[in-house]
Length: 427
Image 1 (cartoon, one colour):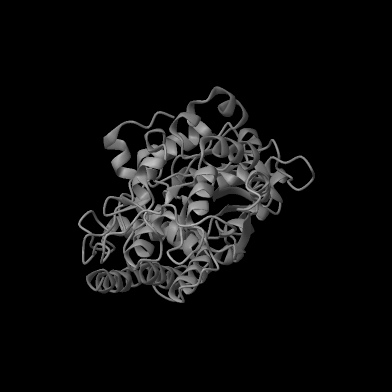
Image 2 (image 1 turned 120 degrees about the vertical axis):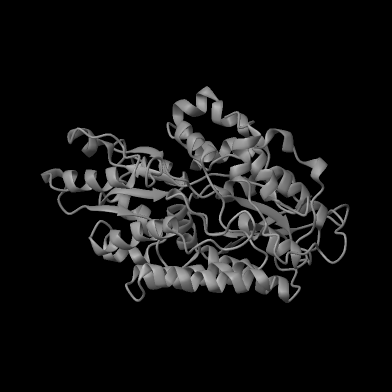
């Protein structure tokens, strides 16, 4: 995918709020020849099962610099909590750490990760928005490991039988459910699922809903923009989905994996998830009942295609780690184009390299790549602020209150507006 249009890419760039943000207190020194030896790699739970194989490959060629995988909890919030605890105690237990792209500002501003040498990474081949997402005040702190956005998985076999196309709007999605779920073949199925548990996935999903209605969580000026008709329309799409039964009640506890399992078990007509689900749902080993029966498209929105959230896990070096030269070389290995291709082929992890989206062999194998390309061109970031932990916690609390019926949507949005304004003002 040749994502070279600056105007388009600017829309997908992670923007650090200017309100109260501050550069690191002293100029960071890029990781250099600061020792070689064994390292650890702290990353979320590897549901793909391919990560250890890559680490084994590194270890085979680096017998005195072996990497050990430290699996963190599957949920992003818990991962962030453990990484922060490790940093605040200045522990050297983690050497290389995988960071959600939206954590870059927080970890760099607090001095928890080292600056990386920009010239040692092939940034000219990587999607520019993903490179920018790894920067803080113009310096690279996290190396792009992959990048993607939310996709809509649809039971195209049932849609085709009903004479329907994959939906491009929320109204089309709900109309499709009204028709398909009446069919005998859809007995026991529910309409739609996403990530609605009280964790980072909810921040992603509500950001997508609000952006897809033409609104935003935080505006270009760094101030919250939640008391708008568009923000209410986005939240109401989710609130009404639960009220009217388009989303199963249990979906309010779902993360990526819970929803994926439901979709693969044939219990959902539509599911919002990342690209990694594609390979797992297509497995023909008996683990998926929907292999060969689904399609992928950009997420729908209020009046047309929606705005997915930019998602990426990047790699950084802990400020307090030992053997930083080995860590830097390991990151270069893990973020190389060769490794990106391997991860794409084995686990459908979205690549950071622009050319891979146009690779005929990959497109033939992964039919969702054109859809992912289209989604990336229309994607938007989460509200990235230095005090991101406080911001995402406030978002999750207020949106959960709305989805569970504890607060009307306008009341929840007003409360969130006030809370985010205070958080951003005190950065």
